[in-house]
Amino acid sequence: MSQPVQPPNPPQQPYGGQSADGNPYAGQQPAPGNPYAGQQPGAPTGNPFAGQQPGQFAGGFPPAPPAARGNVGLGVLTALGTAIVAAILYGVIAGSIEREVGYAAIGVGFLVGFAASKVGGPLPAVGAASAVFSLGAVFLGQLVAMSMILADGLGVGFSEVFFEHFGDVVDVWKQEADFMTYLFLLLGPVAAFGGARKAA
Picture 1 (cartoon, one colour):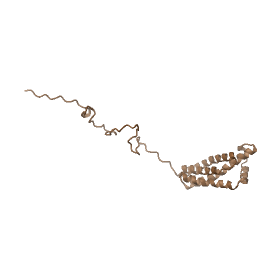
Picture 2: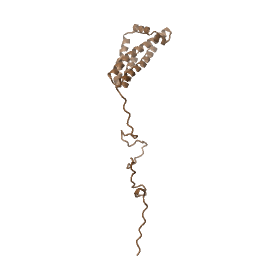
Picture 3: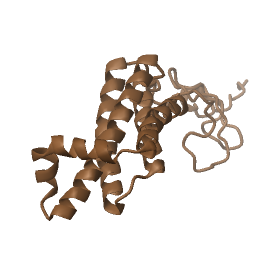
């Protein structure tokens, strides 16, 4: 008697999977260590970060630490540097139009206080330094303006008047100072406190 013939074995699928609907990869097990195994592909959006939750970092890089606030020394140095630059600008503006400008004096103080507190933090020492340097900046700006006016009237250079006759410039400033001159001097420190509060 003859024995029944066994049907030939179906071809082996790679990785032991079975083909489904002609898909040679159906039923495959995901490779170990694949972080994307089992994920369903979403609709393409063109955004490589689509699907990430806020706070996830694709490269594993943590966010940059916030800037250190509260450095008194850095705040005072910033106040000094800003005061010098603001004094020169204020003096050039006032000297060019040959009159003092109240808004410019307020701007000097605000700028000094804002920059110092932005860098040094909302510390009382930084605010106090800003006020002092603002007062000095407005005064120095008035002297620069006075020197420009005197140099123009005498037909000499600004540097000669300002650097070689600085004492005379201060004496002329004292003679010419009035209520508005002192008011502008006070506006600088007040505006410095306002700028410091705004930065904080």
